[in-house]
Structures are given as C-alpha cells and as structure tokens.
Length: 231
Image (tube, rainbow, N blue to C red):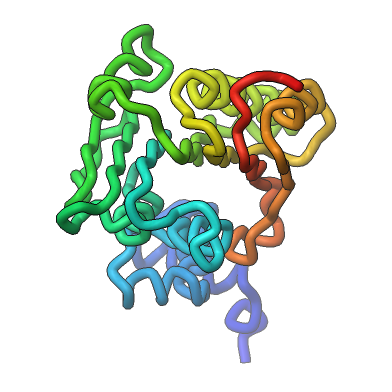
C-alpha cells in the first residue's frame, strides 16, 4: 500500500487535489469530519460546535435559568445564542430575554434580538442597552476572539483586550448577583483583570470545557455573584 494512503498528509493532499483546497484547509476539514461535537451539532441543529462549550460551562442551569436576561457578545454564527434562548426560555411567553451582537453578517436566531454591529464601536454598548429596553442583564457572555497571528504573546494580548472590553460592559449592565463569562487564552497577563473580578464577584473560576479542543489555548473565566463594587 502507498505510504501516503496511511498518513494524514496523504489524505490532505487527496482532499486538496479533489476539492481545490490548501493543505491547511484540507487538514481543518479532516478534523471537522472526525469531530464528534461537529456531528452532534448538526444532529441537534446547533449552528456551531461551540454551543457545547456553553452547555458545559452552564452545566445543569448554573446561570442560564428560565426568565433571565442574557447578552451574548461575539455571537456569530449563533451557537451560544441558541443555547441561551432555549435555557432562559426566551422563545416562550413570559420567558427570559437574549440580546446578541456580532460585527460579521449572521442569520438571526429565533427568540433573540440579534444585532449585526461592532460591539467595539463607540455606539456598540448603547445599542445593546437599547435592545435590553433600559433594563439590566443577569448574564453577559463573551466568546469574542481576535484573528490569530500565530504569535502567542500578540494573540494573548489581543484576546485580553476583548475580554477587558466585555468586562467593562458587564460592569455597566449586570444586575446584582449576575454572571460574566469570557474567553481568554492561557497566560499570565490577565492577572490584573482576574484580581479586579475577584473583588467584584463572589466566585471566579478558570474553566476549560470538554468541548474546547485539547490543542487550543482557550479557557473561560466564569464569574458569578456580581456585587456591583469592590469589597
């Protein structure tokens, strides 16, 4: 048997020739096809495998409870928004509310207020507040991530800047005892952010959900019990 048929590289070369893909794109496609979370997302109608990250972070309704008001930052393609709508029952009479935003074009999720706008724009936070109807949120979620450069320190600083922007918004809109969840990368430069969160929330945890790929450096900060001010 040809050795290339036994190797991942050979498989990617065949995919490249058959579909006009680059080697990196072919490897990504192979990984997707083998990923059980991708298959399960298709089966359950989730728009992305990322939906399972939020399901795992929330567990058995840890913070996404019926009736709660949720803001989802960096929502496209909508996997987290779908989970939030279902868990807070935003698609049912008397249920909660979900407001989601992303700068990339995306299809609205039934039961949610979906904005196509840059959260980092000057009027981004105000648009979200308007969509909330002037009320406060019980949960602020951020799965925002920058375009990676491959340079670890640069990528870490970029995602940290997004996490800090999301945190600043959360401080402005969260109701007492609210929850803030944000993506970060492994590294030590988020210590200032972490220290401030610990002063304002009853509990702060680093979590890497099982759906997060092992080779990925992403983790999530889950902060619960917002006090509104440092203690």
